[in-house]
Image (cartoon, rainbow, N blue to C red):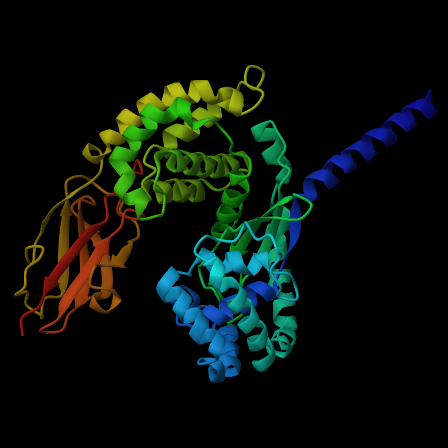
Length: 461
């Protein structure tokens, strides 16, 4: 009997280890990838703004030192023409990177390549790319930075080890056959990309290309979990979201009518894409709740999604909680979709009426918005709202005139029971200014955020 018990115990352990191995196999160990580094450097040299960040200056200074002599290489001139004529930028660049092999060859079937790559120009681009690799001594540069790459990977490993891949199988009630890769990009600043490619074994490979935008006191990249984990959780969720959008058409179209303009600016041009993105983002928050993330981080993530237009996100998370609490009736998330479609009827009405819930700017003390004769010696811009805000922090962006028109901000204070924001500024005479207030901080205690509100003005000579 004891022998049988021992055998059974051993089999259980082996089974558990096999499940863990199968689950972990979906997530490949993070790495720095020379294809990603090469393409990032190429489109840095073309002048693409998204590839010209210097957040990780220790590394980008090395790039500038080594590759500046090649800014007019024939490859770079050719790539600039692709940017201008075909809009090759952002994730299209990373799409090319992950489609290449390690010898920088493109497979005969490159159907996964982003459509912005003109198929008639791909061959010449690859030919010039290989010439650039040789002429610029790219391999020597890459190998000279291997210690830096290894240190970056080492610093990322605690996040990698903390990702609960089993949660996805449990929560969705089904497995994904996708394989997930984490690539650490050293020069892309806060640019994170999610390209994918189906390999010759017909395995769908999903890549989360993570930028480097936070550094420590000596200038080395660090990866704060509260910034990195939501991005990774988001990317992995995409491979599990698979539902028939038709049952959501009426409510989806109503929602898009209310938030479509904001969604289109984020490249979400259809109601069905918006609903998929909403589900992915709500699942991020559900993961955070299930793993006992601090309440302040969960609130922040919720507010971020509301400011991006997913104003019904809290209600959607509530529905996911209901699904999780009754898995006997709903073994998979897809089995819950008819009930979720019913809930979306209410979501659509809520979203259509959301502007009435948002806090709004009612007045500015020092001048009227759009004034062209503002005194340059004023020291504050005092903004009044129609209801109390949370009263912590501030979130600004530049306005339509660009970053150069952003006023110099000295401090930010709240008054009048948090109904008033006092922005301390230093202004110059005869200058146009623009500043946009954002909902990440300018929101109610309940998490309802203002619409982005631009203040524009010009100071007198």
